[in-house]
Length: 140
Image (tube, rainbow, N blue to C red; front, side):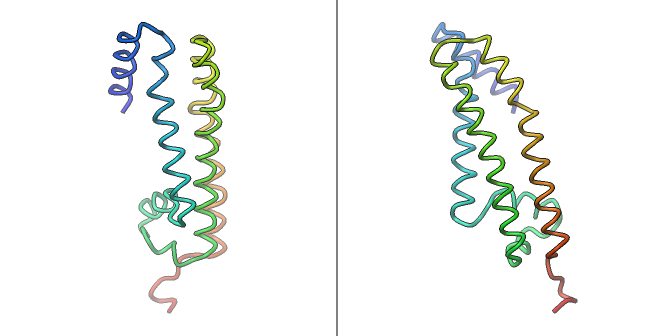
């Protein structure tokens, strides 16, 4: 996804002539991601839970365990917070045209913040999976 985003960013910048527009697609994607994740958590179908379920081979079984549903919801909120923090930090810089600071903030709040959200999610979800595992058919 990096190359198409880079090309879109370069195209927008070339069209507007404003260097800060290079960061606009990232802001749009961040806002859409935060909104989608937040909605999924609010309606009780946290996206992170489905991602973990797909990875562990129990795509839907985790939903039958309240502790795992809560953990997946909390994990989803960790990622919402990461996206919102990026937007809150970058938007004033975008509006002011501070391209250098946008790049710096993008580096600082990029992968490191995603890694933190992933690590916190791992802690919460692994604890829930250990404390309240998904029942297997043999457990019935």
